[in-house]
Image (cartoon, rainbow, N blue to C red):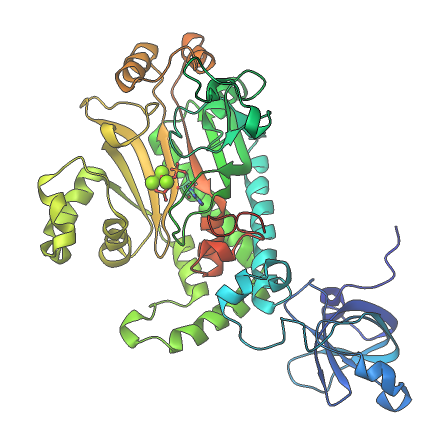
Length: 479
Ligand code: ATP
Ligand code: MG
Ligand code: MG
Ligand code: MG
């Protein structure tokens, strides 16, 4: 199909002036009855279109309002205005779709993020959300690029699954039956074990268990798909529907897993910085504006691009859980009450304020915490020789907290089965998972990275609802 119009990005990047070009897009502003700032989504930058107002009908000029879709045809000429190399000297202007300026909610003024969230379908027309969504798109391509270049096989694990060993209490149930006609057990209660054509199913919370079975045949695989958690927590880091990247590699131990995670994260950030320079610069400027309204002590020490560069140029700090507890114990804040309980309690899960202290105050760097107490981690993680810690890792990022959770998996059949028994996990339900340990079991490891948390970090946004097109949260389930 031949595209008759040229994308604004290409026009602005042109090496020379051009006779007779056509651009289509949406009006951002219209000044002095003459200058249209036109945006078509290809770039954060608008192209200035200079309207020949003397020869344009009054009626048409009135219809050039913010949000209107227009087509402009004319010459690409050098611009005298500051900040842009080219502009379009318009010969022919067509209004493709009117926009009632009184009613259009996205007038160019600073809207609150809350207001914009209520207009998820229109917020993408603002500079900030256009930039965020382009960065998101480039990052997702970078994810595939990284793994494909390294010879990983992309695997689509099921969205509907019976495996719920890990997601107790956090899973959305799937039913194939009318809600008022669900199968009942002898006591007359709904029998969820049979609600999906006679079986029980959920929306997936992670593709890991299925992914492991593929890694034990294809060697190195990754999944990248939607994941669902019935989170009723309303934090700025949790969504009910989010996208997760889960590589799984046979013959890799936990150290290899850490190397992979670090290399991967650095690659995708670098990729986004190379491809999305204008968008990231815009987002950085927006953040700097925001910082100005904060008290000095709360302002972040680094601007966005500096922060991203820091992650590229510095190794993540690798610290065992036990070392982390010691650091927290010795730290000044542990004298405060909220840190107190850690002093006597090796084995407790870290709270987000502990994680933030380690990352933002103590190390001032991303941190990989490893070798967690077995009792706070999932059943499938490799037990260490000490018998009380497992080969688990969490990667913690400044301003984000946990961005990755991963582990070396328990490859020993007997140890795994014993652990499942102790936790009351049904061996029969996971017969297929146990087969990987029955037939040719080997050391393997992998991790899950929440894609939106990565996008949060790269864009500098602070609420996860602002980096996914249509956020699914308890307040926002349907739109
Ligand atoms: P958290 O401690 O933040 O609740 P988790 O330990 O429950 O995360 P994992 O099961 O380890 O999460 O999942 C792997 C990764 O998926 C996490 O490190 C995080 O990046 C991401 N993630 C988990 N839950 C959510 C969610 N509800 N919304 C967005 N991302 C999530
Ligand atoms: Mg969680
Ligand atoms: Mg966690
Ligand atoms: Mg985790």
